[in-house]
Length: 99
Length: 99
Length: 99
Image (cartoon, rainbow over all chains, first blue to last red; front, side, top):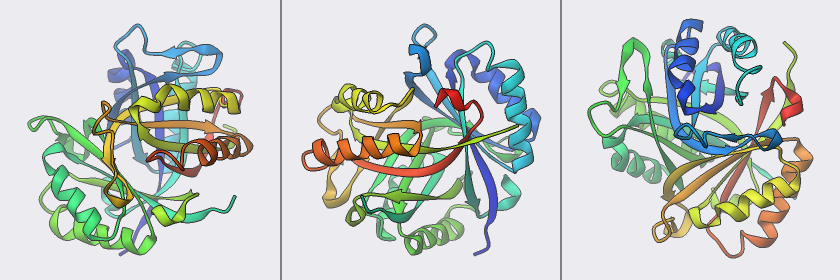
């Protein structure tokens, strides 16, 4: 079957940021997202989510230009202020109209 | 150490489909799977799992031919009827007899 | 924006191993990690986590040499004794000093 290339963007942040991050992702053009509960630790011993009901791991599968817009939003509004991690990987999707 | 190439297939669906999806994956030839709880939203505002105890995020690491069989099963029996997302990525494994 | 290449290492194991695995990962040089709850099944019908409060899915984004050190630790101290799965994939990060 034919497949299309997309980017999988994974963002880890404190749970209290979920609704704002979901808005950022969808305003950038993402058609969907998935959130899983998480906990962990970042650089400098930052313990994500200890005070705020844990951590979230938000994933969205998007075209690369949408990923760039989301990352720009993270850079301007989140990275300076919050313990937020993110990484990008290449994925293939089957139903490309969904992503 | 030597590594082998595999596909990581990630499927997001409503939690009530878990046992059926696990059967599909193992019948296709997967030797293992991992399920994490999740919630989220897909295209057209489909809110995964709102009514059924949430969402699952199912992962399986498989040879590419097994991934194709699973995707064919998703295309015929799930995509037309359910809000199911899936994506494929390339991964490396160490103990290749396990995948 | 400029990006840097890293490895995403995902380890699935019984939850009782979490603190030991987190130590392994950080001693190898990882600056952060994320843990999500999970359940599943491995080869030979090994049901991860049935007896011990479930399973974990531990992720860490690291340089490739750190990934190798972690995998060597898994090979010597975990693979022979526990139902542990792991896989590696290529990811890009934005803030490379964090990984």
